Image 1 (cartoon, one colour):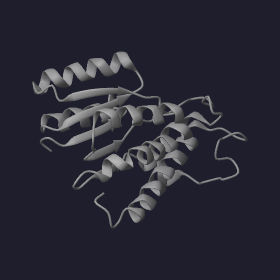
Image 2 (cartoon, rainbow, N blue to C red):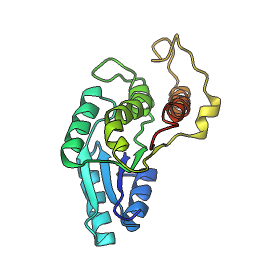
Image 3 (cartoon, rainbow, N blue to C red):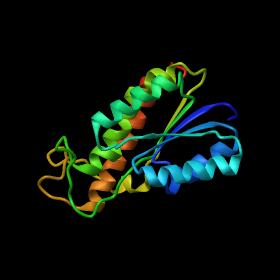
Image 4 (cartoon, rainbow, N blue to C red):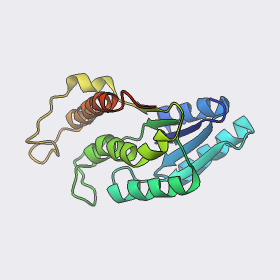
Length: 187
């Protein structure tokens, strides 16, 4: 992993933070992409102090917002030429139905569309790497999901756990389709 560029969304807590820390220890340039500036800066400082390599950079993004993802990707491409590994990890579990500024249910927007759009906008940077990887973090909760295309945004009926499971199933389906689409590429 030495000198590889690894982008980790939602890297300021949980699985993302541990992943970022361990990959940074291996000598990779870790790029945290987080929503919460205060938490993210603290994690960045912790990782840089731990490794002594100053190899943790930081970008801010609200993964429930298409505009924010597009802005992040543009800012990223202005600073970095390529990505060796993209780890889509950012996610949300909400107790009540909320919508983003675009009118989309918040967990669907963050957990599924966030992965899809981030991958879409960063694909040119991944294509520039010799051998790139995309890791989409999901959950065993996908086993309990049933896609209801008539209620994908939970407008008719909202159940927090069911909606979370649906978004994780969407992650799995997206990953499978992406693997087929990228099968004969460097990714």
